[in-house]
Image 1 (cartoon, helix red, strand yellow):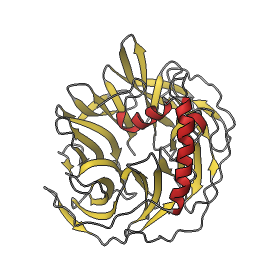
Image 2: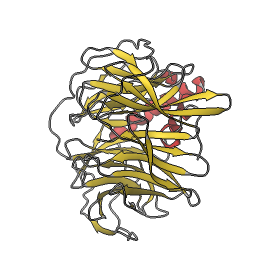
Image 3: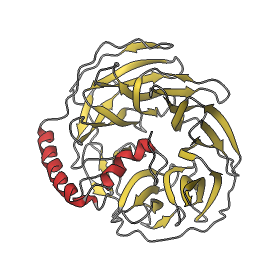
Length: 421
C-alpha cells in the first residue's frame, strides 16, 4: 500500500494525485482524446454482462436474483433542487478552542502504522476507545448503519491482499465478513437492514458483481454483473436505486448508472469524466465532479437531476474541488479544495446565503469531512509535518462558533472519520 504525503487515504486519492501531477502538455492532448472517446461512448454505452452462476461463499448463504441486463428503468421526471453558484472562495482562517457541547457523539476512524491497524471511537472531549485492532489486516472506510448500532468497514489482508467487507453487528461482538474478492465499494440501505457492495464476480474473472447483503440473515443476492470495474456505489436516500460509478479497464473513461433493486440498469449520461458521484440528500439529484477541464487546472462540483436535467455548477473555486458532503440538518455543503501550490483544505458553503468559510486550519493539509447528525459540527482529518515525521489529528469544526479544535493527535496515520448517527 502506498501513501501520499498530502493524503493519509491511499484508496480514495491515489488516482486523483496521479491526474493532478500530469504534465500540462500531455494533459491537454489527453483531454482532447478523452472528449472524442466520450462522444463515441454516448452512442455505444458501456458493455453490461449477463449474470453468471453465483459462487458459494464460506460462512454465508447466498441466493441468486433474476437479472435483466440493458433494460431501462423508469425514472420520475424531476429536476435537481436549485442551488446558487459560487463565484469565489474567500479565505477565512478559523480560530482555535471551539465550544464543544453535548450530546456526546461518537466518531469512528482508523489509526494505522506498519504493525497494527485499529478501528477507534472518539467523543467530543477527545476521549477514545478501540473497537477493533489487527496486526494482520489493514482496516478502511468505516460506515455506520443509519441507526448507529452497527458499523461496516473494509479489511485487507496484508499478506494475500484480499479485501473483505466486514460488519460489526454489536459494538461488543466479533464481526462477520464476506469472502468476496477485491471489494471496491459498499453502502448501507436507508433502513439499515441491507448493504450493497461490489467486487470481482469470481476469482480470475474480469467481471464485477454488485451484491445485496442481508445483514441480519448474513446472506447475499446478486443484483448485477458488469464487464467494467465498479469504482464506487451509493444507495439512494429514497431507498429505490443504487448509484453506480464504473471505469473502463482499457481507457480512463467512467460511466454512471442507476441500478434498480430488481436488477434493471439505466445509464446517466454526463458531459464529464467524474472522479466521484454522490446522491443529493433529497434523492432527486446527483453531485459529481468533472476532470475534463483543460490542463486539469480546475475541477468543480456539479448537480444534475436523476433524469439528466438541470445540470448546474455549484462551485467555481478555480481549484481542484471534490468530495462534497451535505449536512443532514442544515442547508450546508462541506467540500475539499487544493491546487498545485496550496495544501488541501476544507470549506463549508451555505447553500442559502452563498457564503463560504474555511473549516480547516490554514497551516495543515485536511481531508474527509463528516457531519454530525444535527449539522452543528464537522469532523475531518488534518496533517502537519514537523520535520520528517507527520503529525495527524482528528479535528472538529463548530459551525456556530466558526472555530476548529483538534480532538485527537496521533503519531500514526489516520483515515476517513465517520460520525455516528
